[in-house]
Every structure is written in C-alpha cells, then in structure tokens.
Image (cartoon, rainbow, N blue to C red; front, side, top):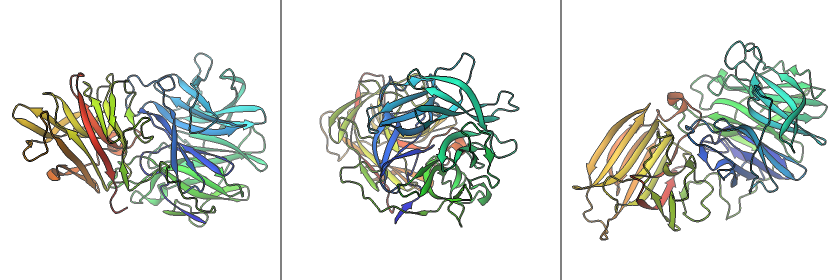
Length: 524
C-alpha cells in the first residue's frame, strides 16, 4: 500500500491525461503558450512521479507566434497502442487539432499530423483517442449544431485514419452532458470496461462549478445511458471555503490487478485566488452495479490517497515532480522543468557553465506578444517559497536583469537591477490588469561587494509567505507585503498558473549574466 499526497503534481499542471503500459504509468498536462509543451511524467506507484521529457520541444511541433499566455496547447490526451505512444491535443493558436507519436514517451516525438476536416467544419477542442482492434476513433468536444448559447456543447466520435490524418465514415453524437442546460461539455474520454463502453466528460467550465460526468452503452456508437447519480465527481457542493475546488477534467486508469484510479485537475484557492493554477489530483474508483464511484464513503478528493500498489521510490538521477529545494543547472540539454514563454531564438541564452547562464537583453516585455521574451522560469508549486538568483551588474545603461514572477502577459511582478549614472538601482514593478506601477526604486550601490572592473554579483530574492511577498537584495529587504492574489485566473482570467525565474531586458545587443538560481519551499 502506498499513500499519494494530493495534489500528486503541485502547481501549474492542468488537464491531466494518463495511460498505463505494463506496470508503468505515463501522464501529460496542458502547457498553453509555454515551451517546451506538454510535460511527460512517469510513475510506477501513482504517487511518486518523475518528469522524463516534454512532447513538444521543436518549433516544427509547436507554433506559438503571437500567442498570448492562455492560448496555445489545450488538453492533451496520451494513449498507447501496439508499441506506439500517441499524444493528441489542440493548438488553438495555430492549426487546431493534431497528434504526434513516439516509441519512447521520453521522446523524441514526431512532427504533428494536423487533423483534416471538411471545410467549414469545426472539430472542437479536447480531443481523445480510442483504439479497438485495428481501428482508431477520434473522440472530441464541439459546439452543437443548433447551439442555444456559447458553450452549448456535445461529445462526438468518428473513425480516424491515422495514416492520412483524416476523419472517415459517419460521425456519432455520444453525449450531451448530465445536467439540464449543461455548458462546456468537454474533456471527453472513451473506455471499454467489461461489457460496457463508458464516456466521461467535464461539465460547467473550469471554475467553481466544474465536474465530471459519465454515461455508458453496450454499443460503441450508442445510445449512451446517463448515470443517474451524476456528477461522478465535483466539489461545488462543498462550498467556496473548501480547500480543494474546481475539480474536473478526469481520465481513468487501471492497475495490473484490476484496481481503478482517476486523475483530474483541481485548485487550492485562498481568498478566492489560486496562484498555483490548476493542479493534478488522484482518487480511487470502485465499480458498483456497473458504474464508477469515486472514493466510496468519502465522495471527494482526499489529502492522503491510499493506492493499492507497492511504493516505488524514484531513482537518484530522476527529475522529480516535487523537490523542496531545486538548484537549477544550466547545462545542455536544459533541465526538463525549465519553461519559456513562447519559443526563444537560438541566441536568447548562452550557457557559460553549469550554474551560470547569459540571457540576451531582448527588447521585449511579457506584454509584447510579437517579441521574444528573455525569460527562463519554473512552475510555482507552493505559496511558501523563496526564489533567488545572482545577477551580474555589468550591464549597459538601460539594460535590466533580475527575477520575474509571471502569471500572464498583463499580470506579473518584476524585480530587476539596472545600471544608471548614479549607480546600480533595484526596481520592483507590478503589472496588474495592463497597468504598470513601480512599487520600489532605490540606488543600492556596490559598496563592499566583490567587484571586478565591470560589475559585481548581486543576490536577488523573492520570498513568498501565504499571499504576500518580499523582495531582497543581498539579504536586505527593500519592499515587503506585496499581495499576489491578482496573479490568478480568478482575478485575471485565463487558464494558467504562476511561474518564476530569470529575466533580462534591453536593446537586444547585450547579455545579462545569472548564476545560482535556487527555488526553495521551506517547511514542506
């Protein structure tokens, strides 16, 4: 018996999809406009997860030109069939639905095969795959033909010719949701379990009313019988103060011994703000009278989820999904956990040595959608954190370098140093809802620091406790008590979570040097 601590993937890991191959489990998540896209996780006990790769690493796989933060990649599905892994998803910013393949889930993955659909037909989003015999079926979400409102959707299916990337034969409407006037019936998956086919889906959007519903049929094409006890899972009845909310968008998986589990997204908001974004949770499923029941006797997500598998510790060289201290290395290839906002250019960064890197001072801020942002970050995984790095002050006048705490294009906190004639200045800047405000600006000088002819190393730190942050230079606090609730979908809109890391800005000619990027989660 193993105990999985929920969430099993902390931080911005939404829309989980899972599959099993033998005793190995593989899981993927949405990444929207971050690069690389779609992380791949591996586990042998559903509790301890390691990141083994990213599906979409090349620009030929993932076009994000001009994409704002909550665009790009929506809701991937991972499946395995006859020695091949398939990942199907939607790039809402370019090309629509596509799939890629790999023999090894760690990669490399193929270039995308974009779904061919008749002109004027909208295939929808949140695609999934179902294999039966030699046939593959596309299962997706789309707006109803005579939709009464935006989000009046249905689950549908059609055979998919994987060689040609086109849908073929008749299409079938499988399910229109459990609730009367259900909106955003999406995130569907199809399974054959025993004598029934089951279709699951999310309903009511990704916020507080989010839920998972299920229907079944003895025939692949239906009709599908609605589960009279739907929703299969939701937390909306637990109230807005419950610590885990927005539960939905699930995917089922079995163990070799026939036990069943469900992964799904959820949030952990405080003061109606979930800066960590939508995270991945796990629950046990029991079959009763031919229907799935989630955590019988509880009916909700457990903080400590028992799993009927022996615990399998990660190998020493693994890239764990969770670490209380992350000392980020700058090596080639880069650490799998690093993220860029859209694709960087080849000259955006230069690796100097394992713990030192140079970022080009590109003339782009997060809100500049047509620019190339010089930013390398990792996902925030707890509200109690300390993110710090050393930055070299040998900058040209007007260049900035430091730390960026990023939600999206129009909501972030920026902590940088820049060289002025009167000395080195430290600036804390807030952008909220497209409005910029300087929170602190001071000349800190370089007195007493180890100097070279061209500059000195300064240690910048952002410390979070609860939903308040403080900003320090060389251990000296320059501003504190900065709230972070605005860095969330509840306040800013969108579908992502926060990341933080190193950032540079300038006229595009110089480089800023960084070293010793460390993220700590004290007390956890």
